[in-house]
Figure 1 (tube, rainbow, N blue to C red):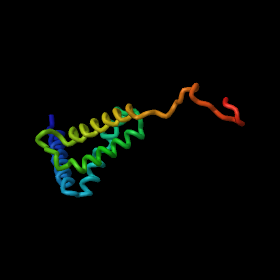
Figure 2 (tube, rainbow, N blue to C red):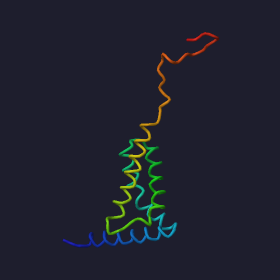
Figure 3 (cartoon, helix red, strand yellow):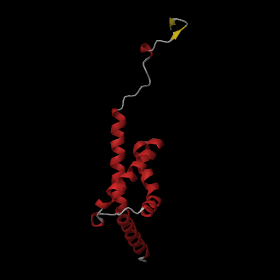
Figure 4 (tube, rainbow, N blue to C red):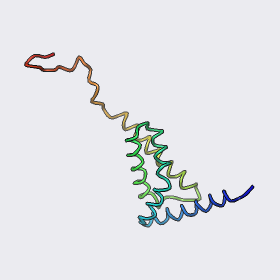
Length: 123
């Protein structure tokens, strides 16, 4: 059994940690690299939670906006970057679910409350 997959994973994690540190210092290229390697997983999770492609895209964007401001808070000793990012995505998606549940829906309006005026007569 080869240890190459473990070495590859460790190397990738070190590179990710470096990118997060660079992002914490405002490096836009680091943000783009993190986005490229993580966006599909974040979107898949948010789509699973929300079941709405448009909302999932919005929450994915919100997650990466939060990543920019929270990058200095990441501590690699506590866990992997992907786990940390997916936790941010999950919490953001659940917040959106709660928001959508509270938001009043304009449609459908009960038929008894709708009066259509046509040529001066209410139908």
